[in-house]
Image (cartoon, rainbow, N blue to C red):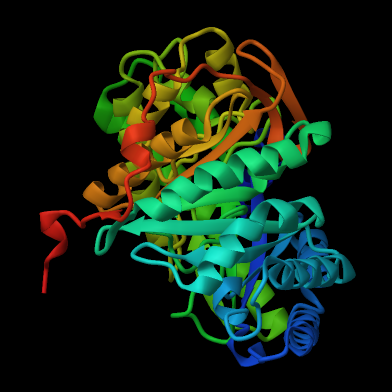
Length: 454
C-alpha cells in the first residue's frame, strides 16, 4: 500500500531534487533473425525490433503523464551483433550494414539509443567478433543512435589482451572520425570486464544470450534526492549516515519498480530488472560527487573519497534491493566525469585524477567513465588503461568498464562540449610512460586462482 505521505514525498523528490527514471529499456533477442544472407538478416532484424518495441515511446509518455514521473530515455538493447552477423558478415561493410539497420529501427521508433553493436570476447575471438570490433569506428560514424560495447575480460576467463590492444586503436580511430563533432564517437563505446546481461544503461547495454525473447529493464536515478537527504545528518555518526542512505535508496527504487511494472503490463513484455544506480546528469544538484561532498569531502577525489564511495555504493544496494522484486544491471553509484557537474569541478580543481578515479572504481558500479584524455595519447596507452581497469574487475569479481574519449587536437586544460546528458569533459592528464611492450604481447592474462570454484 502506498500512503499519501509517500505520494507527497515522491512528488517533492521529483519537483525539487531531480528524481527521475533514467531509462526504460526493452531488451530484444535477435537470435531468430540469423540468416546466411546479410540483407535478409537486416530485414528480419528491422521487422522484429520495430514490431516488439512499437509502443515503447507512447507507453513511456503515458506513464509519465499518468504518474508525473519523468522518464528521461526510452531505449532498446539487442543480442550482441557479432553473434547475429556471424553467419552472413564476411567483410566489415557487412557489419556496418547491420549498424545502419539498428539505427534506422531506432529512428523509426523514436528511441534515444539502441545498444548491442557488441562482441563478447573475454577469452578468444571468432572471425566475426574481430570483424565487428574493427568496424566499430565506421559503424558509429555513419549512425546516430547506435551504441557499442565489447566485453574483453571476466573473472572466469581472464583478460583477452588481443582484444584490449585492438580496442585502443578502435577508440582512437573513432575519436578521429568524429573530430569535427568534439570526438563524440568514443562516448558510445564501452569496454567491459564481467559485463552483465541485463544492463539498461547506455552505452554498454546489450540483451544477453541468457535472457528471454524480450524483457523490460528499468534504470532509476536520484543523486539529488540522496544529497538532500544527507543534509539532515551533517556531523552525525556513520550508523546514522548509512541508515539515511538505505532509506533513501529504498524510496528511489520504489519509483522504478512502479514504472517497470506499469510498462511491463502496458507492453505485454515480461519485467526483467530494476537497476538502482545513482546515475548523475550535468544538471545542478544532480551529482554523485555532490553526494560525496555532503558526506564531508571538500571535493570528490580528496582523501577519504574511496571510503565514502564504498559506503554509498553498499548502502544504496542494501536499501534498494528490498524495494524491488528483481534487482540487476550495474546497481550502485556511477562516477562519469563529463556527466557530473561535481566531478567536472573536482577535475578542474586538480583534486580528481585518473589514478584516483581508478581507485574509486574498485568500489563503485562501473569504471573509468566519460573521461576525456589528450588527443595525442598513443593507442597503446589507452589499451594499458583498459587493461588496468579490466584487472580490477577480474580480480574483484565485479563489473568494471572504460569509456575514454581522446580529445583530438586538444590538450590538458581544454574541454569537449557534448551537451545533453553527456555534458562537458575537461581533458585530464594521463601517465605518459610507455606500456607498449606490455600491451603488444599476444594472448591473454589468465583467470585468477579464486575463479576456480567448481
